[in-house]
Image (cartoon, rainbow, N blue to C red; front, side, top):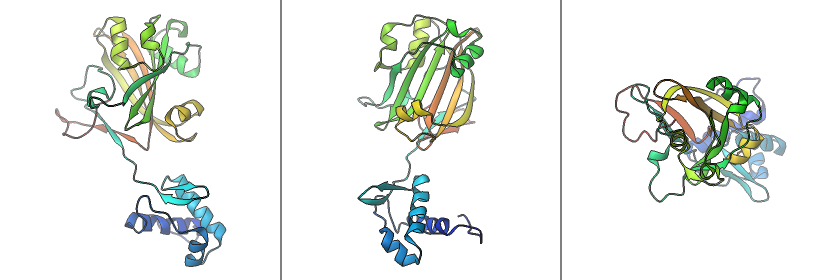
Length: 261
């Protein structure tokens, strides 16, 4: 728990007190917080201080402000564990598809197949694949889990044109395997890297999150068995709903969640 100091603003001290009540279950998930006048009277502070404290909790995704209704405690974030076994994982079999139950509406869905125009992302893909942007084809998709969008994905390959069915908006499948089939090869991992960014306008719209929301980024290259780079992938994942787990034993523990590419 953070410690208040003499320089800690009053609204932040109040926010921490409310956070402690939420953590203790005094205000459980879904509960409505007392109104501004009630909190103002209880803590002996101005209503503006209460408003600032609640806004602080909203920024931290602890509460949800419903205009004209009240302020409600959000349920704890449910995170999908994306397991990576660096000792045994070799073949690139796609993202989370093996872990999706039959009959679910979850999965990966094509959003668009935009032209490669030389944007910063396109240039990076070309650099990683050792080609020029004009030699690449691109497909964008979204991965849905638990009934909502969790990841925005972009794939670049040094061949084309791609099959029309594969690039049709709404096409459901496993883009890694689909692209490997289109190339007539089996893909293997070359490298993967992890980072973080704030959601831009496009990703915020795809994932249904505010602009600037922290996104986990997993990017990398997959290659043919002889080492020729054939796929550059860049996934942007809502950081509030997913985490990456590295396993260093031959067999990951049961219940660790889906594997990722």
